[in-house]
Structures are given as C-alpha cells and as structure tokens.
Image 1 (cartoon, rainbow, N blue to C red):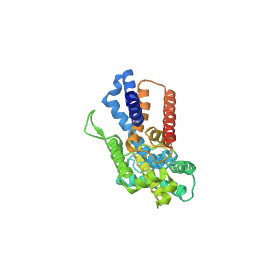
Image 2 (cartoon, helix red, strand yellow):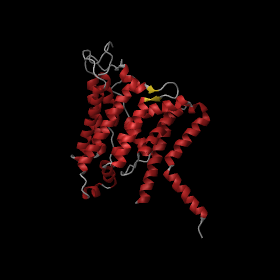
Image 3 (tube, helix red, strand yellow):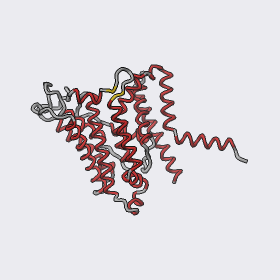
Image 4 (spheres, helix red, strand yellow):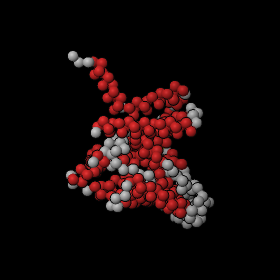
Length: 341
C-alpha cells in the first residue's frame, strides 16, 4: 500500500529543493513588507530594479565563467576601468574640468563601443592565460584584477585630471542610466530594459547555441569534453571574452546611472556577482546554472541591501546576513552535488 504521507513529504521536499531560491525571495519581501508596508510602493520596486540592472549584467558575465567550473575576480575592476573610459570621453564640452580638454564632440556610440571592447580584451587576456598557459582561473583573474586596477589608476591620474572624480557627463549619456519610457511612477527605465534584453540574449546563448552546449559540457567534465572533440581552449577564450564584454557594458551603464566615475568604481562587485550566481543556483562545481536563477539571485541581494536599509537595519548586520546566505547556498549546492555523486 502506498504511503501517502511519505509520498507527500517527498513531493514537498522536491518542490522546496527545486524552488528554494524563489521561496527565499518571496519570504524576504513579505518579511520586510510586514515591518514596513511602504516597501511595496512602486517607487521602491522601481529603485530595486534600477539598482539590480548593472549588477545583473555583471552576474550574467560571471555565470559564464562559473558554469565552466572557473571563477573571475577581475569583473569589478573591469567595470571600473570601462566606466572611467566611457565617462572620460563623454563630458560636456563646456565643463571646466574636462578629462580631455581638446577632445571634439564624439558620437555617443563610439566611447560606449570602445569601453565594451576594452572589457572584451581584458576577458580575452583572462581566457588566454587560463586556457593556453593553464593558470588556474582564480590566480589568472586575480592577476588581471590587480593589473587592471593599476592601468585604470594610471589612466585616471593623467594630466590634467590628476585623479579627480569625473563629472559633467553629457545628457545623452546620462539619459541611458536615468531616463525612462513613459512618465510618472509607472515609467520603465531604459537601464532595466537593457538588462532584460541582455538577460534574454544570454538565455539564448545558454540554451540555444553550440557555445552554450559546449560551455555546460566543459563545466560538467572537462576531460570528457576534450574526448568528445570540443576545442576547450577556444571555447574558454570565447566565454571569457563574452564575460569581459558584459563587464564593459555594465561599466558604461554604471557611469551613466551615477553621472560620473572614479577608478574605485566596481570595487568588490565581483564578489556580489559570484554570491548572486551561487544563491541563484549556479553550481560552484561547474556545469549547472540558469539565467532566471542568476536574475533572482541578484534581486535577492539587492532587496537585502535596499530593504534592510529601508527599515533601518545597520549595514554591518546586512553584511552578516549576506554572508550567512552565501554560506548556506554553497553548503546546499555541495550537498546536492554529493548526493548526485
């Protein structure tokens, strides 16, 4: 005779395991809303989406690397470099402290594409060092992180800027980060639409392309991928380059959103991105991860930052809560991996 209670328990356990990330998100929103119902206002939700947008693009780039069983510590510094590059070339011509005083007016897309290309080149360097020189991703991207920050600081310290914060950005540039379709409370920010579009493109790459298929294969078992005929080195270079381009785009959007840039932009963003990916179900052992999971992971950490600040919780407690969530997510992931083995 079928044990109904046991059957129901297994179903509940399976459902909880599969949708744990979404359950956490709902409970988090409910808890903060009970404490302060104003949290569910349109303005609050809009602010959360805006703050999540650049972080989501960075996390999607990091997800590419994590799925291959790698890691990327250079993401935040690449964001900072590309933010400074785009901002330095898109200042108002009548701004007194221009980074390039004699730079002529440039079409908006030129500095943006240049910054994205710089991010891609940084990613190519990472991919080459990991795939061709066989340097572990942790060490390779740690070296890139330090080097990129040095390059950015030298660039930022050039005459006549001398390490002064870059401001006075052109309206057509800042509109990307602060403008929206429509008006009033229910307007849709451009930056949110860009993040959604990027997420859709990444979902297509993950699920509908040869690159995505091979990416999961490399992360699942790199030796089996080689035996099956996959050119692992080539695909790793592609994957790191794509991730770098996404960091470059995020840097451009961050400069546009905040209306300025310094060489410290993006500091520690890579850790938030890795945490969001892990909480969103991207396995630290490689081969597993989805775009919706990453997006929800980003939302969870944004809600923690925004929501706990909203109800007056100390930033130090926020760090503790985030740390506990990260450890719990990794422990849960490793338990699932052990059970699978």
